[in-house]
Image (tube, rainbow, N blue to C red; front, side, top):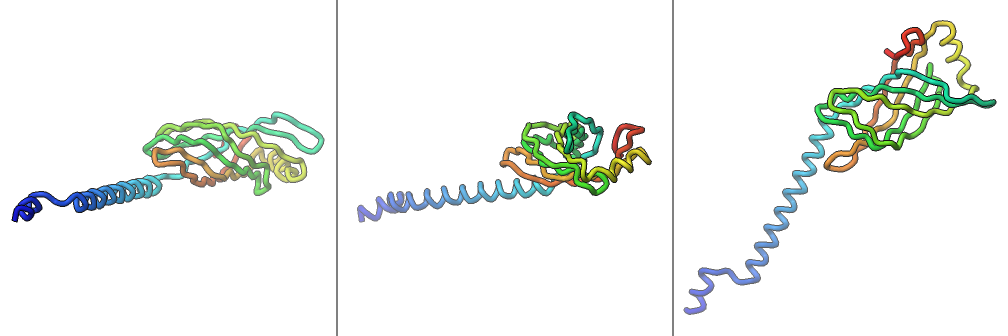
Length: 176
């Protein structure tokens, strides 16, 4: 009887340990589920940045080709800042590949704001004949810029694509 009275008010050490373990695992499960839910919500509310060609400046010419700096305007339509830690890119002029590469410099675009990004692009003369003729005749070029942004968030790094087309005019000096 003495033992029954002791056990009635208190659980045994092993029962208490099992209860604490269950509580600990339940809390971990809830935190993991909450983090996964936040990540899914965050990605679901992410809008693709708007990338526009602003300018192209020749930085070097050689026998086989040259290099240009492509200036892009990156607009962030989201309600949060874009903390980009990497950007890959491919630039086409009138559907002819101009060049591609990777920008490893971190840049930040504030919420609903724009930032200018300079991309170094190496090219060969072989594919640019038609694009050059179009620029000389009409003063405009169709372009396509595509690639991926790797964005740093409190929940980890996420890579999201972008793909923009437009027309570049030498008369106005900017893309549409």
